[in-house]
Image 1 (cartoon, rainbow, N blue to C red):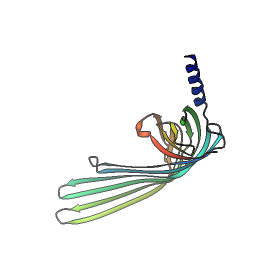
Image 2: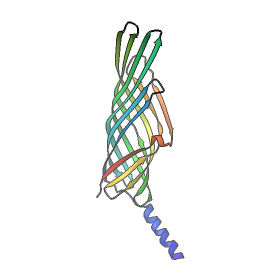
Image 3: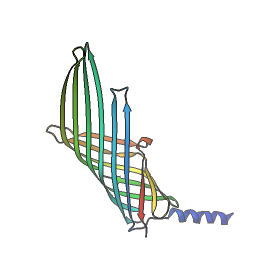
Image 4: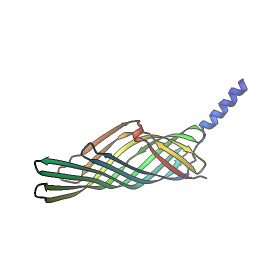
Length: 223
């Protein structure tokens, strides 16, 4: 019995000390797309696209620094129809954010079992982009079949800076490939439009939830 316990302790000790070696380099990234239609709420539609390639370098055993650089776009479209006697006013609003994303980070790994790690990642995501609004109003005279259109478009630069901590899991399929997932995030983000008098919009995020889960595939240049 003692031999079994000793063997188990040795095995556990060996697994808990598995490390990703200093000098290891990896490539990873995220490609996320979502589309939500809500026809019960003013025929609203929301689309989000995010493409962030990432490179990391282990400056110590189980400690990596890295940088993600990519692109994001989010679009909200709302259609509102108003009736007044024989007249119809249809307003279509489209609101688009597109930006270059730069996200330096540092990540610390801890071994659970062989090939499976948990990690904590501290990142500073920055966005430099544009916020565009497009509004089209169509006035229809249903009696005389008259139609009048009006279109308004504005475009404003914006900057967003945040500090986030993300917990996650990383499973190595073999020495070169792994699958990683982050679950939730804890952090702060400030957003500001580049116009006179604009106030900062601050956003605090704290929680572990399935809506914040992201998945990625990583290629490791193993020694």
